Amino acid sequence: MISLKDLATEKVTVISGPYGSGKTNVAVNLAMDIAKSGQVCRIADLDIVNPYFRSADNAKMLESLGVQTMIPTFANTNVDIPALPPNYQLLFTGEGRSVADVGGDGDGAAVLGMSHDQYVEAGYKMYFVYNRYRYITSEPEGALEVLEAIKRASGLEFHGIINNSNLGEETNEKIILDAIPYAERLSEIAKLPLLLTTSPDWVELENTVTITDITKKLF
Image 1 (cartoon, one colour):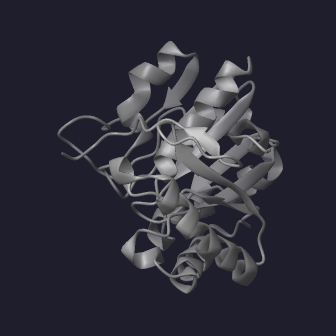
Image 2: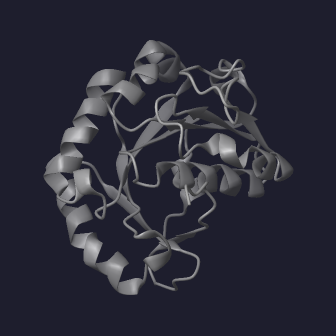
């Protein structure tokens, strides 16, 4: 069974997906897993459009685990404007592995397009986080539209799909299992492999990857 850290085969691992897909939670868990394996790891908060669910909110916890955080200057302040982390270049040149948490639509992915050549030269893998229980991606065809928009804006290719279908604290075994056919359909029409299905740590389900729900809540 593949694990999250097995996805980090290149210098930079890009995690992207629509608003509400849980991409930031996946990115943070990935960075934690890489660090726990003994590798140097940093995570870059490149979600410069959406201020609500950000890896920046987990900076102290991540730093305590040895994950270097790269966050915009104004993150976690009363000023929230689009900005890249001041140490952004370390994403490509720093020691070890890097994880990029990227806004999940054409506008959010534009930040990738600005550094297209650097991602290619450094070596990257990009993964699409899918959540069947969000309005825009309730059907695989809607998710495919978002995926294609990210590809167009970034000029980069996706290398696989992470099925992160959940309903937050209400998630149970049935909710996860019911979403798998939708993720398989997205894999088929996007012509990308479905690499893994996640489950929260309170659900014990075979053939899934357990992740911890640690991202900021609005209420």
